Length: 181
Length: 376
Image (cartoon, rainbow over all chains, first blue to last red):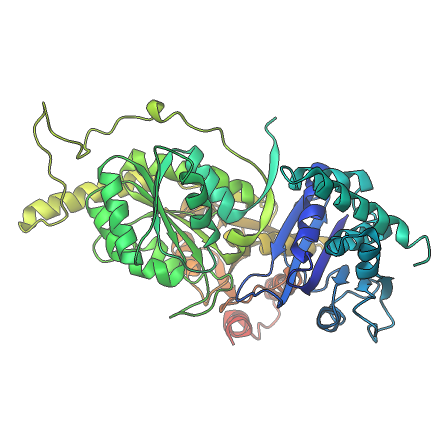
């Protein structure tokens, strides 16, 4: 199986970190992975995006011209990627910042109130892990445990409380959709 | 088994260089390879026996490379296309003085300042020497994160062994992309072969002179022929390529680096359509691995050369096969990276043209038509 996932949002929303955690988890599950960040004249507050490919076989192109899944953390990202997602694909929207969904009917839309869930947890910054938890629970790319472990290794050396809140955010995101948020 | 780590290409290159014994880095920033000097700076500041210096220009940095090499260090510089142009004078001097060094070019779109997107615009510059004078540089072209690690170690060994500058030719995508990599074991610097040509103080031995100025033509001719013999040996000894699904192939795609990855994806798709197509991927660009290609040229219908430029390696492919099979070209210059699907369509249309030719049908477009698709 090969999945191409695009993460997109404002710089500072932790968009690259989402991809990095997922790619690391995929690697630890012995899958082939690539992580390709957008690079160029990027700036704080501008747009950020990255493409992650997770596959059981060798990966040809790390670019996704028509991704299976797109995660939009803000409205401009929804506009940018709504026409690129492959028919039958899924678009995840940060519903706190995106009130209007894509106009296409041949893709599924999943709403995740990432900002407010993170805020309820007491740390606005973990909205990215809330979203990643929801994404992975929906499409099942890696076991949840692999994401938790990836956060553990990637944040190694940070305060214990930082690691734990990111892990909690992943778990909350994974549960939020079944709990009817 | 050693542990896999997820690292971006530039960082893999930096770490592999350090583990290969690189202890001196000189460079000047340019996108899309700045993460490499960044990595070297962060690592070398913690090491007592290493030097990182951001020079005032590319020209200064390549001359610092000459100095470090003459003193015996395993030394590296890196840049991207326009910056590598500026380093060419120094690379020529390295070749002329037979000094080992590793030069990294993470190519971007050109000519001129071009853009910062992945491109393969510098194949000619890299494989034909690049600077002035009668010389060549060894050119290694990684296509995977793991190959970046392995080829970086090889680059330092080859540079020392042949006393010649070695170029690692990647592109923006190879540099930016993260992939799982098993890093090489660090070498013990003391275990490396000693160099009997260093300028390291002549106490107790006759003095040595290192120069690239030979005013007396017969003396320079002697150097030129010595270099020629060295290049002949390199051409015999190190050509390397990946041959993928070629045993039963009617059609071959030839591509290197990032383009080869896309080509491999396209080959898979075309195989699913029942087309017998394989991939020929040079890992060394100079010396170009011509022998294996020449051998298969009698049994295949056509080679499609796919590059992220307007057609450079295609000339080496034509030289290799000497007209024994058809050679066509498909390219996307300017930093555009096409999808495997797009290339699969090119493979398919080429295949059907070949088939109709074989069955006596009229060939309406041929190579010129194909080229137009790619370069307009």
